Amino acid sequence: MLLLAAAFVVGFVLLLYMVSPLISPKPLKLPGAHVVVTGGSSGIGKCIAIECYKQGAFITLIARDENKLLQTKKEIEKYSVNDKQVVLCISVDVSKDYEQVENVLKQAQEKLGPVDLLVNCAGTSVTGKFEAIEVNSFERLMAVNYLGSVYPSRAVISTMKERRMGRIVFVSSQAGQLGLFGYTAYSPTKFALRGLAEALQMEVKPYNIYVTVAYPPDTDTPGFAEESKTKPLETKLISETSSVCQAEQVARVIVKDAIQGNFNSSVGSDGYMLSILTSGMSPVTSITEGLQQVVCMGIFRIIGLFYLGSFDSIVRRCMMQREKSESTDKTE
Ligand SMILES: NC(=O)c1ccc[n+]([C@@H]2O[C@H](COP(=O)([O-])OP(=O)(O)OC[C@H]3O[C@@H](n4cnc5c(N)ncnc54)[C@H](OP(=O)(O)O)[C@@H]3O)[C@@H](O)[C@H]2O)c1
Ligand SMILES: *[C@@H]1O[C@H](CO)[C@@H](O)[C@H](O)[C@H]1NC(C)=O
Image 1 (tube, rainbow, N blue to C red):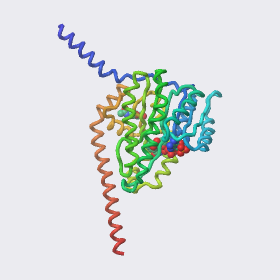
Image 2: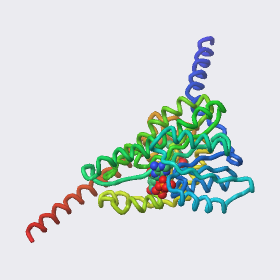
Image 3: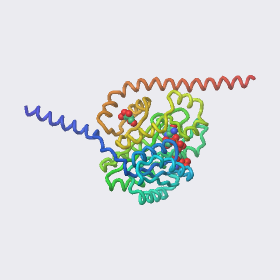
Image 4: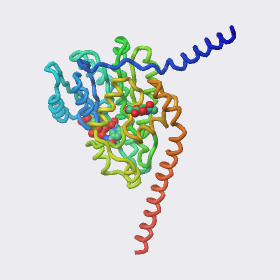
């Protein structure tokens, strides 16, 4: 009898231990909150800013081009829900100088109060075959996509810890979940954000700060249009196996997940599958999320193998066609 009771108690304690990381955070209240969006003057970042503004937040937009910032400010202000709301614009390169980033964020916090939500969305991409990408592009992408997310986060984290509240979003990519043809310069910068996010989340969770990593699919934005101009054929064909999303839709999902404090944020059925497959040792924020990962992992790996097979065959076909056209060129 005593043994049974002891076993019961031990079992109960073990269960609590397992469930404790699964307790969901309290949702962030957006009305009156200060939201900073880097890369907020275009594409996904702009739509995230609009979504937060519509829900009553005060916004700071960060990007380099001042004209684009002012134009976006005007566009966002159309969606105001009360007359106290402010959109502040800051022109700075998030990847160059940490002191400068720290200074402008200090100024923004003096004007609009401490940052409640930081969305690191500034980013850029270069595609091409490994040997065709300029060496300095590898450095530039790491600077903008990775360090450009480290600097603003590092600049706001101490205040968030003091206040024991805050949210930080890193905008990665589906190319930050798997490596695809043409993305040797881009993918590593987006994978890096995941490592940063996992380590940072473990540090700041006791301070009631929650980190979200978003993995958008191909999304219709000015940045995407620019990237598409120089994409290798293989990369295009692989991308075409899934559809292009609207920036508004992607932004809505990211804002919802940031409010809830979810570690992962993904869009669509491919996005769902990738989020399960790459959950690895990442933090979980709800019991249902953990259960879905445990149950679906194996079957999704099988489906994933079919995807990989079809990508490999696209790459092989393109190579064969290229060789064939080269040899006919020679004989002519
Ligand atoms: N679109 C997609 O298909 C897709 C898919 C997955 C992930 N993503 C990621 O989502 C994010 C947004 O993408 P998007 O397509 O919306 O891009 P976008 O339309 O090109 O917008 C990029 C934004 O970042 C700013 N920016 C770029 N470099 C900067 C720098 N060094 N310092 C400060 N601001 C900078 C740009 O303004 P300035 O040029 O004026 O500085 C602009 O506001 C990126 O991180 C991208 O990698 C996009
Ligand atoms: C990841 O986030 C999306 C919503 O953004 C959700 O639908 C999905 O279930 C999450 N994936 C996992 C593994 O929890």
